[in-house]
Amino acid sequence: MKTKTALPVLFLTMFFVMVGFGIIIPVLPFYAEELGATPTELGWIMAAYSIMQLIFAPIWGKLSDKVGRKPIMLIGIFGLSISFFLTAISTEFWMLFAARVIGGLLSAANLPTAMAYVADITTPENRSKGMGMIGAAVGLGFIFGPAIGGVFSKISLQYPFIVAGVSSMITFFLVLFILKESLPKQKRTKKNSSSPSQWIHFTGVNRNLYIIQFFVSFTLAGLETTFAYFAYEKAGLDSTHLGYIFMIMGLAGAIVQGGLMGVLAKKFGEQKIIQGGIIVSGIGFALILLTTNFATAAIFISIFGIGNGVIRPAISTILTRYSDGDHGSVTGLLSSFDSLGRIAGPPVGGLLFSYSIGLPFIAGFIISIVALLIFEGYRIKVKQTV
Image (cartoon, rainbow, N blue to C red; front, side):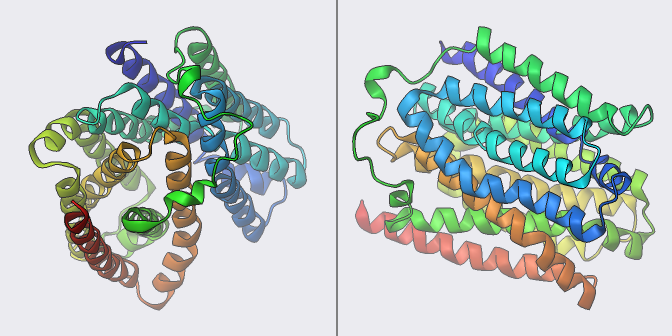
């Protein structure tokens, strides 16, 4: 399948997957409460999904190197759809918990396999553009999904899960009938060979990039957890304002990732993009502390979002460029570090906020400096090996 045809199809695939995922975000807490879940149990529901992603993303990624991208992507999308339908028919907490575990386990295949697909069909020179399109699809899905979920929740709390399930099932058939396999059989890892663990990629100079990805996800998750409370305290912004703010941030990030990543990569290279992304997101954290109203909140968090959003596509491009073809193992491991950050970020952010409302953002600024130093260490080591 030609790159010009495959990338738009893959963009639509990941967009619909993330729309389906985003639909349930505003509804799940109320649905869990309706089934008798306590706030602590709701926390376990959210954590269980991320933990499954953490464990299984590398496994699915490595498996896609053996059997191809398309079968694994189909499993992930189908599993996500089934988990939504199971959630919709849940009548007790344990059923809801089981549905989320199943969803996390199977949907962990989606993002690393999509990124590996991009690495398969793009040249190293054009890869950043492809990775940026995937990031844009994810971002736009998170924008439209919650809005759609909020609308359908007015019918019933079960309805958004049904809509999400149908959306995912439509995506399944889109992939099944339109998307072609990107990894020829002759390039696949042989099933019976003693292929090394995906952790072999967490060695040498590239280790720094995985750690940076953890910091990127960790700080983003901490911000998402605490910003609503912070904005209310500092500027009196309510949930409606916050919805618009996150929509603006998402659109700004999607425009940069989907429209400018390729241009920026050709002009500056991925290393400069990562360096600039870390600096801009750090500046965003510092500016957020100066929030006084809706406009400043939207501008400052968008600055953070643009910087944060360009880092992962650039890291993915570099790692897959030197992965000797086993792109799935690399992107799966990267997704695992992303999930680890999303697991650790919310509780740490909440704890810091309990001490001082500005502390999560001060910590984010400091972590950005640490990430920049780690990246400078990476750049020095790369220069020494050239």
